[in-house]
Image (cartoon, rainbow, N blue to C red; front, top):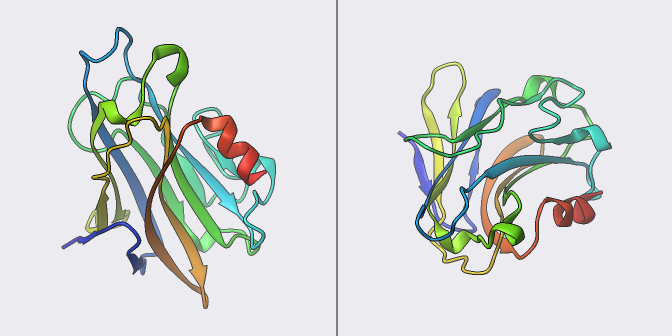
Length: 184
């Protein structure tokens, strides 16, 4: 059974291979444009910076160079139940210099489309064991991000050679480039 986390809570991840599922629903009547939310992963070293540029995993770079992280592809609509986008992680392949995996969701062309996370509901991140399909943890974002156009859902970090997940749930007004500026 999955552990339901609150913002700021941390939980150990004991599965060597797991999948990060991200989901959301949008209020289709709130703007004239369709929503396109994008999951991105920043693979960081001890200095809180990208290990290298190709460790930024997103819809245009689906794999980390060490083979440890795989983005399964961009969902352009978010329609349907369950996960809208997934990222697979294999900790047995992760590069030695990696100490953190930051998971971010941004709204594509949010400013031009006049969209924000206040128009998004039922947002969650969950982690499940890839081998068994068993849920490990889930974090549902309950905050009202009325002006934010990007949200850091959570982070996976290494401490004392063990991997843990932290439910972050922090939004920012900006986009993917703002996170690149933060982590490059």
